[in-house]
Length: 486
Image (cartoon, rainbow, N blue to C red; front, side):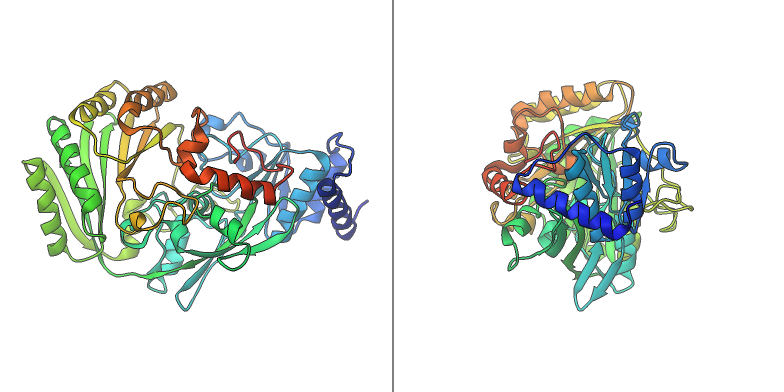
């Protein structure tokens, strides 16, 4: 029987050999080897046949339920991650990192070893800085920082893991005021392919720090914690304006002219829905009082030429506003999770998984009349689907495209095609292709799309070459090799 200390020593030797070019037998791990890995972890290794295996292997999108990992390691420390990577190197086991499990392509899971960082979910605050474990869910980050009257710029999906969100950029509900999630990132700890635990910042491994701010999760290592610059919170104003579908073209034309150039404190999105009936909504959040928000919204209404059929505008505490944006307005923080007892879940959770297909674009220029007509035609097609446009500009656009790995600083808004019905992939594919002549070839790596052809250029633009250099430096053996690895 191999004990923990011996296992670590053997793993380290295997890792050193792998990175020095020495050949190791790669016949694959035996059951005894998997058992030794489990004993060597402070966390828990779940294998096929274990009672919690089916729950552990499931990711957010149930479309990938057929994937059966050889093991899911719930890592409680960076040392656990190092041990898992040594195991993967020694036995040639494919390795996948997982935070929230929301990869649109299902790449939060795989046939080999899933390194799940959910147990590393602590959130602490001191003097304007928040240290957040890589497995923290967004709803918990918001809730824990709210106790200090601070927050970080981030998204709205409550069960998204902070790691994937940050590493891919992080478009969110206060981005126009405070930037992307990665713009608030001051440093991170990451376990690289050789098992080393590195702290990356502008002064330490600055190239890896740069790549970790928009270069995509799963490319360069397994992040274990992040330190963010926080911003103070205050009461905000939420709004939701609905127009009948007959006004959709006028609303979209007005919104794309109004939203990206509004004051930084105003963030909004435009939802075009067929779920099941047709609807057009402009919703959002204003970092200020109701009167000022109403004045800005009136400018949008004036552009549309008619008032909305329904209108909701109300002030809210910041933390409650984040729950509203998450779709959890009537829930507690505990309920705003997936149900379960594994890390990242909550026994009180009420959120359900989804089965969906999605694709993305970035709009660098406003849609023409023909482009608006084409987009509305796609939304009106039979099925259950949405097109969601999120305003950019503001603080996002004032950062140079090469200052971080996220290149889409000059985009006016992001576009997400989201479908969750029988034939979802077909609709998303058709809608995306129909809009390519109008939006061009720009995509968001956090809405990763396995069908993209020129994905490096679409995700990373001119930053792709530098990202490849960082990859070669920190993962020369390509231990981390997603189908769209840098």
